[in-house]
Image (cartoon, rainbow, N blue to C red):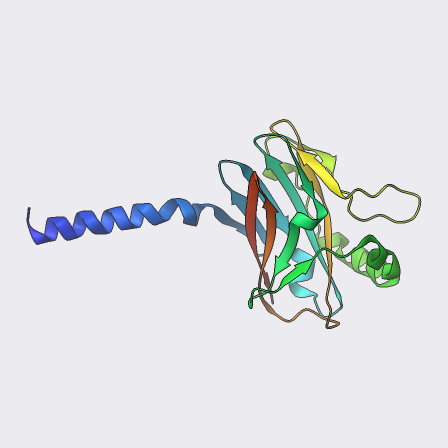
Length: 186
């Protein structure tokens, strides 16, 4: 074999070896991202938060569909900053304490919100209810499987009063279905 043939074959193998990992994350819009693996499909929409992150709260609309039945705990979802610092979901008490600011955020975000239904072949049936106003149930986990897509809002509270522009990653770290979705704040 000639060197040119060997080099060409080697480059082809290298390029095709990297394609599957690159296809795991797909940008579906300026602020909508999809993660796919053999175990899980997850979609995050953050249209409002992408542009409006000067306050202490960040809203991410999220949906996930797993191939086998799993329960994802609140503690298995977090944001990673560019310096690899993990920011957990806000607590229910933080959510209640911040209701004045969150009411305004949710009202302003209404025009930017997206239905997660169109991103999945199985319509979201399970509600991710990590947060709720008084009088409603709050859960510390949700279930998803081949027949059920779970969807809901995720809230993160900044420790510094605002969210700096830059790259973040929404991480789901379940042993049977992990996902990382890039989130870019302008």
